[in-house]
Image (cartoon, rainbow, N blue to C red):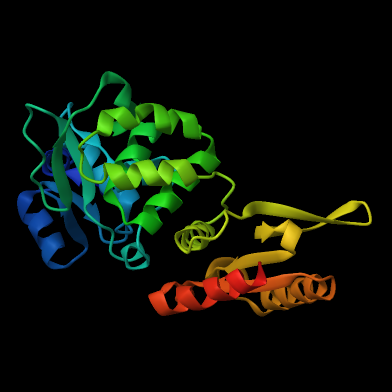
Length: 299
């Protein structure tokens, strides 16, 4: 086996059959596994240890052995549609691939896969990157039932923000989920889902405000000053001059970002605004009670 063929083989997931056809013997493959130069990612599917173990790699691996009626769904489908609802720890150790099959078929039983049976209409499934996937609308509806309330709302907001469908499309499909586990949560969240939320943290903050019995704030409220747009506020009550800002680590953790935030918030306070800052650690029951009470007093 020449080096070029080997390099081409290990640049992406490959099956045992592909390895043998390329001239890699079973004994040599076993040696590569022992040396940890290659790892098995799915049954009879291997990858070079230089390839990251992430959802992209696992989806490519699954495509090599997936049966034609198997559909990627739930969080895996959301990820393929550009909506990442993975937990922080799963960025290093990816979760199992979510798969489903139409009723009457055998569900997937493989390592690194979750297999389910599901009632799927023809319009619930599409082809994406060479594999069957639940559509954005069906994926959002399923996750609205399955995820925790906070994460589910962030998911719905994100799908709406990407423009795959509008809130009415979600409402139109609700009848199909009658008596399904999680449908009560789904019905509640569809009413308040809003694509103007620009991060999961903003969605979590809005949900905490609503759960506290407070009015729904305006999203992405623009502050104009001397004929130009000066700031955009994550959540605001303009009549009361109150705003709530979610500071996520990604965009607010650097010294430069913190200096910018301090400057704009100083300006807002000097011009009569009350500014409440919420961070990722502010979603414990005690912390939520604290800052929502501060908000209540400000309104």
